[in-house]
Image (cartoon, rainbow, N blue to C red; front, side, top):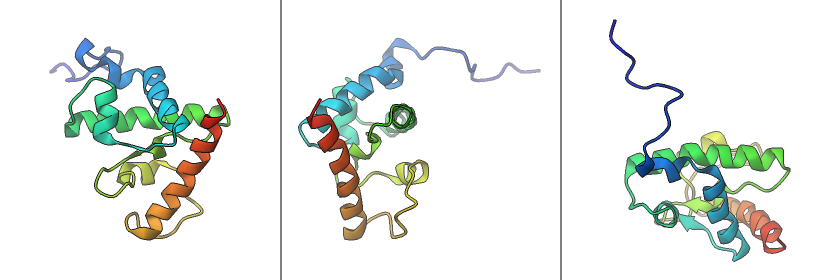
Length: 131
């Protein structure tokens, strides 16, 4: 029988470690929230020491789910909503799938989606500006 390709308890290589450092990702997003700024996926990866690539963006998105899970446990505003596409200022499809958007039933792009995202970002900006 062939060995499994991936081992669940295997640590990421040092080159990828920052993409799994939830504390560090939270710190980047806390800093952005304090100054009222959303970050593109590329900017977020840059803050972690990486150039943009789709595999790194997907790894970041997985980590962002944990960032928001922590925020929910601490009763803090979500932070993943601050990471957006540079082209339109809206998070990607993964955010919409993972996020609690029961109060929104529109398209995931366009002016209505942007207004919804900015409202949710505003909650994080207000909360973290005070801290």
